Image (cartoon, rainbow, N blue to C red; front, side, top):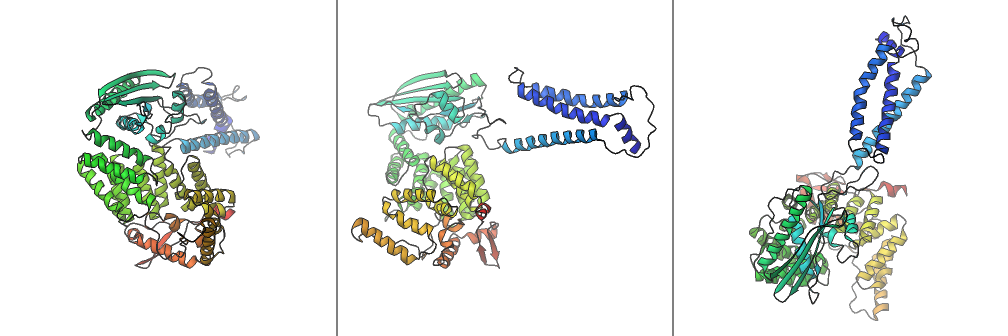
Length: 619
């Protein structure tokens, strides 16, 4: 073996191999760099690689056979040098170093590519190694249809028409459709179609308008190729105003759009059909109005939305989608209004969800609603069974991933929660409630810096929920300015800006007692209203557990102020434990698995800590 190795070295086979590898890598870099500018075809890189790989054994054979050394040009006999392996010379070390550098760079590029190549489901933005976005030709966005009605009061109708068409297009194999939330943010935008398409990372855009006047309906629609701002198809539909005609027009528009795309891109259309769901025009219009309220829900309008959707199902008791939307709006109502005497939001949501599934078992939304109800009742197996079914039925629906992620978050499984919220954002990059909840998932698993970054992104995009969870994080990490900004926002959102001082004291002063906070609240109330009428003292005594479903910050945030406040720490820990038991989480954990921050104690007890943040410890 030593004789062979020496002979390979004498004939410079090792040096030739090393030099060939280094030169080959340089050639590949040159081809990749100047290929576009030189007008080389896309397969030039592959061809160069094939030639270089094929040439490697040929070069090694030539080096051996012809002895590419000065001595080898004069003799062919075998060397009589000693058989011991000769020590390496300076030139050998240079070549070895060059090979190691090349291998290191190639390995780094490979690993970097593996980490940055999009692996999420359709809806993510693919990028080249240089960060340039790649737009799929088979991609489309449906913008909200403009309201051209005389009274300008049909925006909900235009939204509904566009959403129906969007839902049909999502079922076309091979076609990427921008989400409703992402596309509808450009309502009335003055940007041109090419600019909107670039923002949404799509090649094609559908836009249109609706005009209702008396008993007549006019819908116009057009399909635009953003590459060159070219119209591929357009049409105008004038029909008598009936539910049957509305669905027929939607069906026709979707069919024409896919036909135009099929001709241009070879997309297989399959069976294009808009699910009517109802023949009752009044019920359908009420459904569209209620759906619009659900998408823009607030404390001021959510009860109106429930009333409108109840009228929709009264007008047509067989309209499954109206029942599903009624279930969804009842399911979130109490988080906006709080408990209301005479209202049974949860029971009404469950009844509507069951009715929707009875009429149409393929609807995804009722399963998500039942998942949330089961979660709030502590029925965790049922919660995940229902949310899994929702995703199975409609995996492209960001809501389905959001609801399951919320269940994982509350149950203490932050890795699973983060994964679902990531998919939610991949499905719908403009779904900011998912970004906020991804921030909380990161916070609870100890990634404080990323949590703050995500939270701030959601705030800039208009998401305003759950500010109280992040305020103590800002104080703890030294960003008092951001903490104060969030406090001001919270105090103004409840229309009592004067409580900002009380909030500041609560979040920033770990030595303040509950009695001092109550006295400060009383003083501020009298100073700003003139009396104690309507005064409600702050509830920091933890006498009652936080309501199920809304307390994940209390349960899992490592920055909860009362965790560090000597005067209320014991009461806080007892309340936290009571919430976990009230949610029946220990039962679920024992039959499945405990999250990393919790562990069983004996046969019937448990204890939970917090996942601390390394970033925070460094500060």
